[in-house]
Image (cartoon, rainbow, N blue to C red; front, side, top):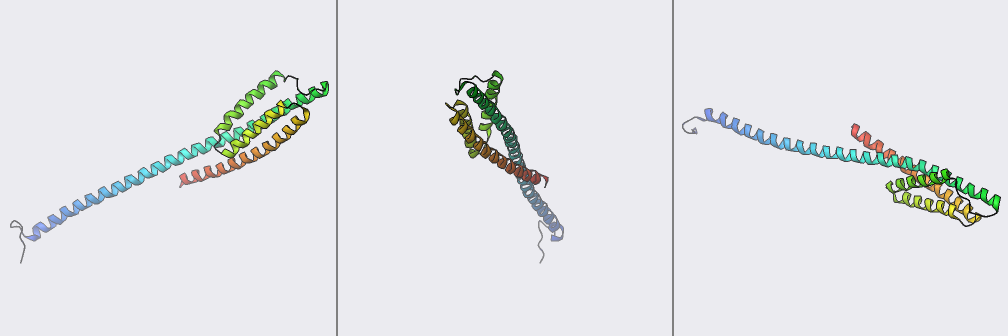
Length: 189
């Protein structure tokens, strides 16, 4: 019993129907495959943008920390020079304070404190910002001390805090370098 469709035998219409159904299914599967590929490509682009942004932030933080570490060292030397001026004035007069800082030292201190403050607020790590604020307070306390003993004690405390701060910044720099390496290696894959 043969099934004729509109008077046409199955040997004639069956290949045509299967060809049409196959083409239709292929079209549907191609669309699904293309959509999956588009979603995968969009996800990869988002990940690449996120990784690029993370790398940019890490590089900025790295540069900030390196500059901050250098500024901290310069500031310590400047506060040391200011303390030396007070010590020399005390030896000459027997009075603590009263000596004016040389204008270049005074200006250098002001400039370096501004750089230090600008960099400090850019640091993402709360602990480091706290150590930096403590260091700054101790340093200012040292040059504002009312007597030699207080000034020396403040200078020692400032130096101790500077060591803590430098160690913390070094730790952050090492961590950032590891993070940067991981991001760069991820992009290379």
